[in-house]
Every structure is written in C-alpha cells, then in structure tokens.
Length: 126
Image (cartoon, rainbow, N blue to C red; front, side, top):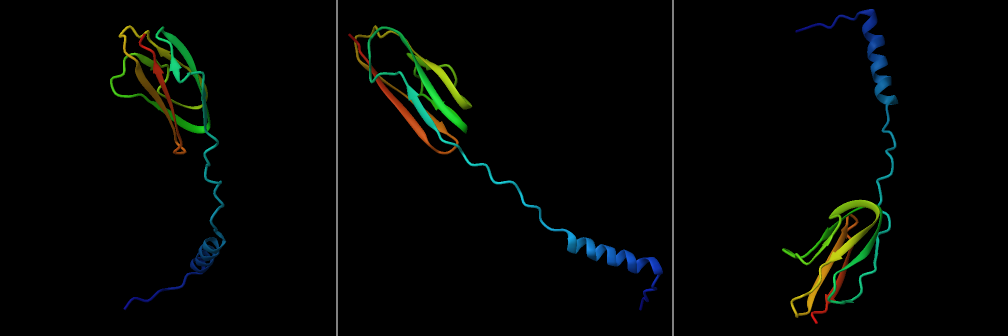
C-alpha cells in the first residue's frame, strides 16, 4: 500500500487547480451567420428576336453565395460568371438563331440560402 506524503506546496496547488476549474465558464459565442435576402432581376424578355443579343441579370445575393446552372451542352447562350457571392450584375449573351426553329432556354440561379430563381425564355426562329 502506498502512502501519500503531504508536502506544503501540494495543497495550495490543488486548491488553485480547483478554483481555476470552477472559475472557467463557457464563453458566449457570436451569433451564427444568417443568410441575407436573395433576389434576381433581369432584362431578359420572355420572347427574344432571332438576332443575337446581350441582356443583364442582376443578382442581389447580400451575404449569400450563389451559382448559375445552364442546361447541359447548351451552346447558343452563355453567362459571364457561373458562381460568386454578394451583389453582381452580369451579362447573358444569346447567339443569333439561324435554324428557322424556335428554341427555348433557361438560366437557374441558386443561393446558399436554398432559394432559386429560374429565368425562362424563347428565341424566335423566323
């Protein structure tokens, strides 16, 4: 059996340790970030002439991140930026339609606050 031998400095250290643990408390953490408002406006009309054109899409993301989704393999229109954050105005560029057939397109803008806006349009073929 082992015997603990009391030394004068051990007790004061133990008392200091106990008071330190009691005195420690959790710090209040800053508030969790909250996504700000998200809004998209554009100059893209529902029906576009067959000539080439450039339109603007204004994304008011505030504290949100956002990304743009286009249909797979679309080659007759494009956007300047596919992702970003905050407030941005970017161009949607549409090529001329020489096919003689009407075509439909869409641009979907998603936000980190799980909101999404889809801009649908048709381009005349003749």
